[in-house]
Length: 335
Length: 96
Image (cartoon, rainbow over the protein chains, first blue to last red):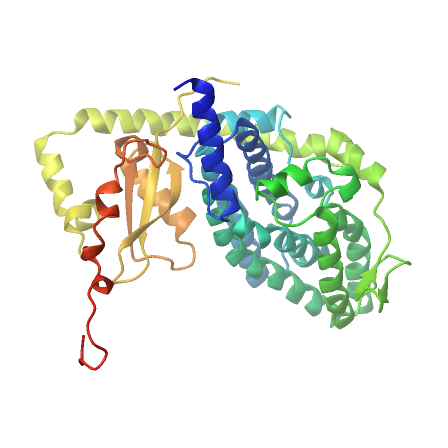
């Protein structure tokens, strides 16, 4: 059998798995383009979670109460966790975690443009939870059914946790809306700033999104950018009404014929500028990530040195002792 | 950037509650076994998802490969008599 025939057979098996709506798993053969697209998409998603810690982390020390501080800490810790789930999914495709971090820091891989906008007021913590995490949920729920197994499983875990993120944000804004005129104005001002960038999170219009068709054929993406954007607008309008804020779009109105809201287009030129690295906080976000990585180098080195020494010291009696600790020995697990 | 050696990859298994098997939940990097357990707690059980964690170095796992041409699972394929539905029993025989 020639190599070409072999490849045809492998491709046919892959196509069959996709056609059956079955999942592709790490050790399966897959077309190089499929692998490359997944690495780009999952890594970009992972980087977004990691960079996404910064805008909100900005307010941890200034949260107005212990309750709000504990919530915000938990949320930022979740974002770190989500980044790790996704890095671990990317690694199943044969890329190492260290490479991914390096590509982020060197600007060779991207993250969501939304995190290049600053958090200027505490109300932004609420708006990010409501609108940004709300948009993320819209994007991510269909990804739970993505064709690549490890990605779908990571998304399931993430979606479960995002619900807390969105609700805490909305509740924060509701609390502020019950406060003073000044607090209500803070909420409105924050919503005005984040509405359009939140709509941009779904990516460019379908006509300008050349990769969408292939990604959908591969079952990586399940909906187009414009479909998801529409879904988000339809979901958000009644939430804005309940909250008592105005969404800053003069063209936003219900269209009875379509059964959906009509709405205006975000400034796509601004979007392209932010994607290219010219947003308000691009340089700051990457510089901070680089600093955190470099400042942590000695900790990683120390842990490696410690691990090496512990392994070197391991002798028979120590092994015996370990065996008696149920939690350390799967074979004798007690719980 | 400094060239440092990456920590080994560990696979993580969590027992959701007593009475259930440990189930694979994902992976992480750690310098040693103990750190792997601590990281696994922080990454995979922030909301009481588990009562017990196993970690094992990914390199220590031996796996069958799904794309292998040799028929690893074939021996089970033609043994339909291993399933209860293979046997026809009249409907009016109780408790079968």
